[in-house]
Length: 463
Image (cartoon, rainbow, N blue to C red; front, side, top):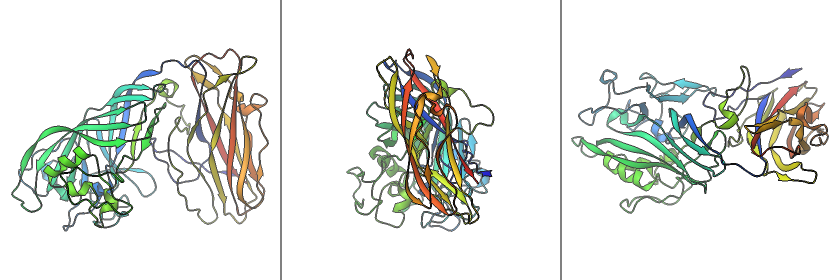
C-alpha cells in the first residue's frame, strides 16, 4: 500500500503539478445573523511577475529583461547595467525577486542567473517557453479585510524595478496599494518613476517625475479568509487614445491599464505593454497576481507537519500529464464555500455546497486499485465550535474507465465526516474517474452566529 504526497510551495497561491495525499480543503459556512467582519491584517504578501515579457530575452545579443528589488539608481545614460554598478538587487527590505524552478520549486535570483530560465538555460526573445518567469514578492503588507462586506485595503512599503535590455531603459514602482471593492473589482496602484529613453536616440536620458499609476485592474475578486489569485485585466482592453498602433485582433490583443501605458510612453517601452500584432504579443499578456493574507482562525499557523491549503484559494485545475506506471490526481479547485446557513425546524442550521471535482488516473499495470477517503475537522470561529460530523456528503462518479465504486452517502451528523469516509474506490488497474460530491451541513441548535471554517483532508491511497 502506498500514499503519494504533494507539498504546497511557501508562496501559498500556486499549485504544484504532482500527486497528492492529505490535501486539505477549506470549507466555510455562515450562520445567521452574520456579524461585521472587518479585521486588521499584517504580513500580507503580494506576488506578481507583471508579464512574461518582463523575464524574456531581448533582441540584442546578451541582453534580457528582468525584475530587480528596490528602486534602481541613475545609470546616467541609456546603457546596459554591469554587476559593478550595484543597481541589480535580488532583495531589498520587504521586496524579493524569485523565479519558478523546473520542478515547481522557487529559485532565488542573482546577477548570474537573471537572464536564465528556471532550468538554467538562456532566456529567449521569442515564444513563451524560454522565459525566466521571475516575479516580485512583496511582504509585510498591512491594512484591513472585511469578508462580510467583501472589501479590502492593503498597502506595502518597498519598491521594485522593471528592466528592459539589461538596463537600456528601466522604471520603478514604489509602495503598491490594493483596493478591493464590494462588487469584486480591484485596483493595484503604485508610484512610478524612472528615466526617459528612446530606442531611436540613445542620447535621450532624463528623469521622469514620480506619478501614481494603476499597475493592474481586476474583476471577480472574492474576499475570503486567505486572499486570492487573479489574472489582471488585459485581454480586450483598449489603449489610450494617444496610442495609434494597437492591434485589436487575435487571441492575445489587449493592454495594461491606460495610465500605465501612458507612463511607459516616457520610458520608451510603451509597445511592450499592449498588443501590436507582433510575435511578442503572447508574452505581453498580464500574468497571475497573487495576494495572501490570513484573517480570523486562519491567522494561526498550522501545526508542524500539516499540509493544509488555506480557505477559498481560487486556483484552476492543474494540468498533469500522467506518467507511465503512476497514480495521479487533480482537483478543479482547492476550496469551496457552502451556502449561508439558514435555521431549520428544531433550531439547527442547514447549508449545502459542492466538493470540487477530483480526477484520479491510475496507469499502474500491476495496480490492485485505490481508495479516496475524506475526513472533516471541527468547524471553528471566534464565536465557538461544532464537530466535523455535522458535515455529510453524497458521492458521485462520472466518466469512469474501469470499475469504480462510489462511496456510500454519509448523512450529516450521523455519522458525518467527523471520521474518515470513502469517497470512491476501485480494485482494478488502469482506471480513471471524475469524482464529485454534494455537501450538506447540519449545525447544532444553539450554534452562535459567526463565520465557521473546517478543513476536509482528502487522502488517495494506492493499493
